[in-house]
Image (cartoon, rainbow, N blue to C red; front, top):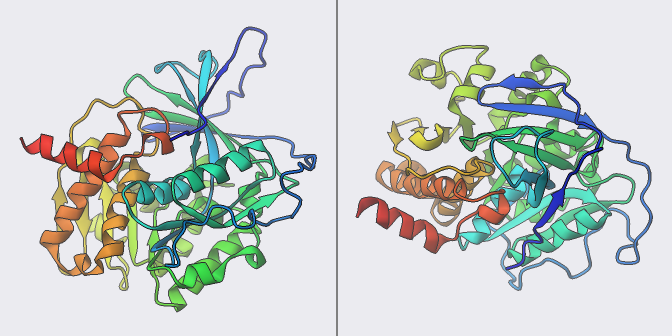
Length: 385
């Protein structure tokens, strides 16, 4: 299966990257902008804001079970770990973007998924649309913008596999999705509607995001939320906290990263204190998931809570691990929502999700590293052998 991987080499005389950065938890995120002058029209696509006619739709009359909303971009991952962006001499191009990763992850696991978002009317945008199609993700909801480029993210890999990010957007096409471009029929027919928080940062995408979430909720669709905090992309820490929490009570399922996001959302409280975690549990929430990297995850419902151990592996690149975890649990819930009421079955589903996340860190990039169901089940069998 082609994933269009390319290595970009950087030699001497190249302008250095901006040094403005902000450390947060285990990761550093750097935000950079680029000028987005109108792009030349390509013969391949002449319709503004539309998907390719007849393209990217899996050959099935059944509506996708999980619809993911948000950003789809290109990650540039260094070929050598342990170097800064300035020190890295080559990068491998890999498709990414948290909600898109989840959509592909679900399809890789044999599930049914769709993606709604926007990319540039450029070669990267075309490539990403093709990758969704190749991975059996319905891309009817993908739109193209001729006046903004597809978002890029340069990812630095530390020697332990953890990451630093530098984003090139401001604006990128994903930020410009409008409410009138949404495929509401696709949203309303889903079993689960999943999104992050990056699409809440700026208009018009913020309004489109809120409208999509409301449509899903009104239609009785289960709503899943992974905040995926990228603090420097927001105007301020306060605006990030306010924006992330603004749609908190809509979600039926929420996944957060223990150390980073709980501390941030609770303004510095202990993320390992059960009482602190319970503060994030709203009255209508069905499942709160707290991921802890290689240590596994914690789960909270109204009736029970617990911890599921992770699968131990040697990490190469943690990009996409959380998205693979989300794909793992949503792929199980899309088949059987009663897992939310049955602790034993939920624990089994979370063991599966933990294995999805673990396998993803053993390869570079997000989408290229997402595992198949067969690979996950084999890894789980080996872990108990």
